[in-house]
Length: 123
Image (cartoon, rainbow, N blue to C red; front, top):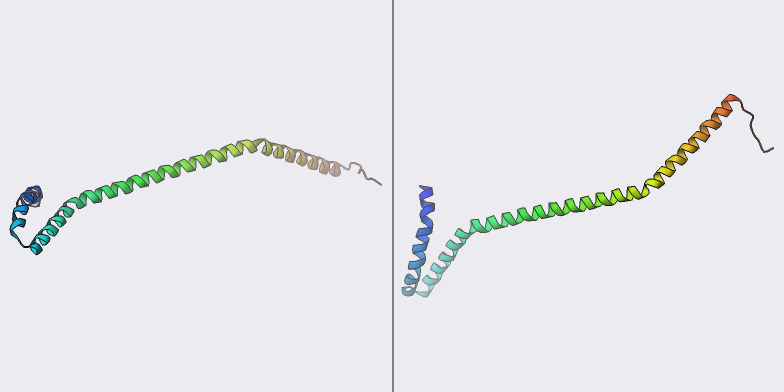
């Protein structure tokens, strides 16, 4: 029954739209305004699902756009991080090699002390 009513609603509204101007010619000004307000409210009720759908779709598109922009910014940030690491790689390797050299010198000195090698003193 509801489906039939939904199918006949546009037909009834069309008949109302055709007959309404004929009725408006014979009615008083206050009644005309009331009927025009009723007609406008009916049109708004008919357009409300469409407007809501457009707004929801616009919100969905905006969220997709913002998500894509966020992913783009994140990928650019990761790219800049990778480039900075590549630029710092020789420095990091040099620090690691120098630390290894210092560690080997320290371990060699400790080994010489443990083995009882003569100490070199300035005096």
